[in-house]
Length: 283
Ligand code: F3S
Image (cartoon, rainbow, N blue to C red; front, side, top):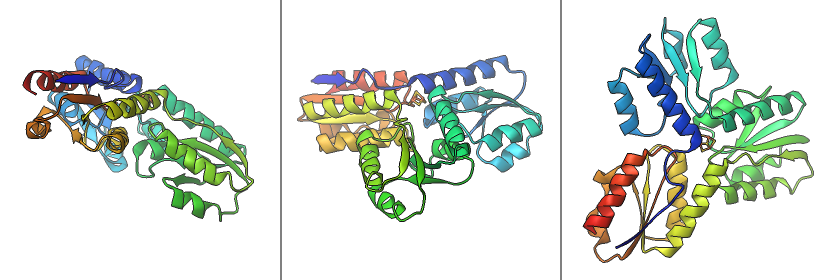
């Protein structure tokens, strides 16, 4: 069996940095460590951290009720009001927001102050997008698809600043920007898709074209893994989305001679290794 593993599979720089910060804080064990939301979309890692005493806070209300502890802001980042709340509550915090996401916060803060309406191309329910919105002065619009972009053209805005969720698919971003270009806005378009995402997506698509079956590894709530799956599925019908080796249905690979493997930004190396080894030995 030939196995092609994407070099870009697994933790990106921002996720690695955030996960390391949590382990570091957990090892200090001065106070209870909380992450504001699961640190990454990976149940294995979250469970391991839990076993080390790290708790996950899911809502602002839970945060508000905390009396003490160290709060870790994850790589997705949060809106300005969360920092204000942490200060108001006098809670210690460690900011693990990915610097690439922080850069978007600075852009939307500045450009919305300059009078531009902010358009975020991404998924409105994704925490990163909620965080970006939270740095805009005034309202921002989130567009996820072509229909939403077409309807947006009816809005009266004149000056726009268009940014993207870091994990958005580049072709879809460009498609939506092209739609917005139909109207003569005074616009500032900033492709804020993370390079790690672009590299990972391109490599995944290239490998998927060359293999008979493709395995995409990642947490089921991980949006960047879901996008990888979509990209691979387009190129290779036999694409399978698994969280860990347990989800892999070996029967599907019986007559396959060449398999590709990639993984989302929140997939730990040991899980990729395990799948890779299994495929090489068992199939
Ligand atoms: Fe940061 Fe890019 Fe990862 S924005 S969290 S390095 S996907």
